[in-house]
Length: 437
Image (cartoon, rainbow, N blue to C red):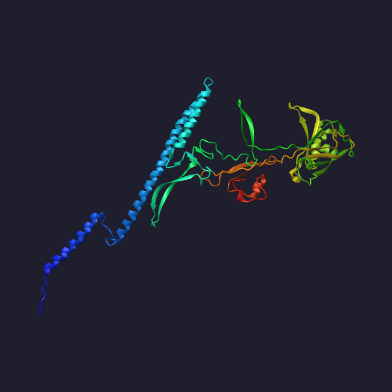
């Protein structure tokens, strides 16, 4: 018969040896790799975390290199700006010295020219890795989408596992000293909208001993009221009810010579009568007698007002503010209640059985103060830094001395009705031409 002898002690020793060998192999792998968790089988959760961290470490290293490059660009620009600032301080000192009458201004100008060349040289040489923030080549330095440069700033992993690289925006309009198309800090600002389509105009003025030129902030045309005058002759006596003066007054008729298109408004015509009751209404103590030119002016003014003619009577003073004796005038008030816009006054169909007092048929045209013509020129509304709406242009608009209203527009455009009001918008054109009118 066959029997199997089991050596329990030997089997236990063998199992222990196998466990030791397995642990030794794992320890050797950890020592050689430097990783306690080398594969998913070691610990799936820890292995996943470790794999993500290894990936992030590589990304952070790349971002760190990118940040270093960005810092190098910023440091180069900063050093250049510091050097330029020092030269500008010397430039300012020379300008102050040039105000002294005893110095040689030609020599100072030569030094200033040298300073300008130094500044230009510093700006052009402040370049790192082919990029220059002080001397740029941007088509539109004022356009935020065109003048920006970015540098990496950080690496971020969000809570949901999404990774991203943050960057910092640098607008070259804030650092560029010289730009190839203009608009650098040390160049003329090219965003001036000029005449703004004729809303303003160039003018010159005296500033001490210098003549300066700039944009006049006011664009206005004041019209002259239609008026005529006559020399008073009197007295005029209204001693019974049959005595009277009658005439027609016409105001605000259009003048064809103003260049306006027909049809021409005929104006507003009103009949006026002056009799004893009119005199007594002004001053009963006169006993129906108009003795002076000031009394005649008062009577005329009262009669014109009572009839709602839109005209009035006045007297005059000379340049020394002294009254001009016996001079009386009739002028239009350009009564807007008529709905008419002309400037005209006329006395017609004059009739009197007490004498004229100097008044008779007469007329006069004034100027249409509301006819302000703009010499339109195209202009551009540039973007302004981080504001995509561009520079806001605003102005006040007033008619006939009324309180001014404020209007404004930018690249987003107002309504076409507003633009038609001040003559910059043609036929209700839509926002397709915003920014360039």
